[in-house]
Structure formats: C-alpha cells, structure tokens
Length: 372
Image 1: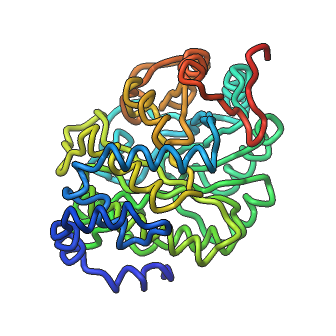
Image 2 (image 1 turned 60 degrees about the vertical axis):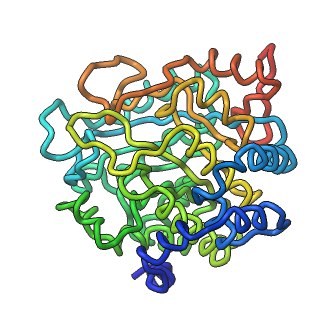
C-alpha cells in the first residue's frame, strides 16, 4: 500500500470540494500576499473566488518562474514503444476494446526512431507504452533504456506501474525519471473510468511513486487527467501528492503535467471541462505553491495556448510529437493514442520560444544556440 494512501484517507473528496467552493476573495488575496504558501493557500488560488485575480497571479507566477528557471523552456519528445494495452480505460485510444492495428517496436525500430529525434536536437526522451506487461515488461524497458541512453542525457518512462526491484534495475540501466498519472484521485469514481485491467487497482497505482522513490528514481512526474472529475478538486489532491513526495523523497526532483482530455478512438467526453483561462489559473496556482516544481505542457494544447503559458510558469514542453509507435520514421494513421493539437516541428517550436525572448534547452544546463 502507498504511504500516500494513508495521507489521502485524511481528506474527503466532498469536503475538499466544499472547501474550494467556500473560498472568498479575501482568502484568495491573503494567499497571494503570503511569501510561503501551503496547500490551504493553493485551495484558495484554484477556487472560483481567485478568478478575478488572475492578472496578479500571472505576474507573480512569471516572476517566480524567472527567478528559478530563467528565460528557458526545456524541450523533450515522447517516443511511443507500443500501443498494446490490457486496460479498458474509457478515455484512452489504447483501450483494449478498441479495434485498430497494434504495434510494439523492436530494438532496431527503437534505434531508428531515436536516430530521427536525436537528429532534430532532442536530448530528453520520454518512453511511452500502453500497459501490456506480458509484452512490454521490465526486461524490455531495460534493454530499450540501455539502447537509448547512448544518445540522450535524460531518459524518462511513462509505462505501467512496476515493482521497486524493477525500478532499481531500470535506474541501474540509466533511467532518470518516472512519470505516472493517477488520472483522478477520486477513489470512489475511479472504477468508472478504469473498469478492468491492472490499472483498475487504485491503490497499487497510487503506490507507484513510493516504489519509484524507494528505488532511487531521481525525478518523478505526477498529475491528473483534467476533465475526468472536478479539475479543482483533483488538482488539490495532486498538490497534496506533490508535497508528500517532496517531504518523503527530498533528494528528488518533481514535475507536474496538466493534460486535458483530447479526441481519441472512442466517444468519451469530459465530465468537467477546464477552459483555457481556468488552465492558466491552475498553472499559476501550482507555481505560486511551489517555485521548484517543473510544469510540463504537452502538444495536447494549441500553439497559441502554449506560446502564452511559456511566459507564466510552464518550464517544459514537447515538440514535434507523435503518439503512435514508429511515428517518427513512418507515420501511419490509426495508431495514435490521442490527437495532437500543436503540430509545429521542433525547429518551429524553437523559433517560437526565441521570439518570446526565451531559450530552448535541449538538455539540463546545455542551452541551444542559434548557430548549433
């Protein structure tokens, strides 16, 4: 069981929802005026009462981000290894029930994909896979990590939850970061979205960050899938999770992702859509809560939105992304996990970053220069 699960039991979903609703403008102003903020302040900053204060939130978020990260945006790219999946998540194109061509990359195909994206300049790679442990198991990931480590300075994974011993093997192979998203922290309604498959086990998934932390994983990424449940409440629980991890595994680094539901193979629609303005409020609230956390905004979002939030708190972005296995060498319709919104090439993304007075960072502390 996750040690964070014990923390989670101290909070009622309904009570947190009511606390968010009960926040006043005065609560939000007080949270903005504090130098060191807590999750209680975060509740005020994501509440409807804080919406009229967004301009001031944005100013403070921008200042804090510049102080910690400078005028930089770190670039990474996802590499999809497989779309085989034994889960039945109602919101995902990889759902086991969906009928489309399934593919798992061989090591030779992984090498070919890596050659393409490394040629574009990327030095941070995120290895992504559907959850089919009989095929894409820890041994497979270990071989892939050892292979890609030769080209990339940071290797992250977003795959099925693994055991502590398996994470230890992957760390030894060169793994830097584990990204695992709870999707929603609403344990009562979680089964509605994950009716079958290993992902249906709420507590096992929640414990993933503890197993990774105990295995010595240097960096972890967490987040909720915005739109499944009330985004404000899920974000409060994400903030609680972040603070728990920072306290428990204090040597590590952390990132927050803010994925909104995107069109996919299937007909699921968001239960609680979050608008662009609300997502900006959420990004600012995370930055005001935590100056150190990295905030990642993927190509799920439009180019206009991403160009805007790189000035307000976002620190990490993907570019030129494909969500299909083998999609960088030979794109094929029907293999993707979800539809991309920002389809700019890596070069176009770099130009957009530079146009706003920022630098694109391909690798930690190595800045991309115009003549490289």
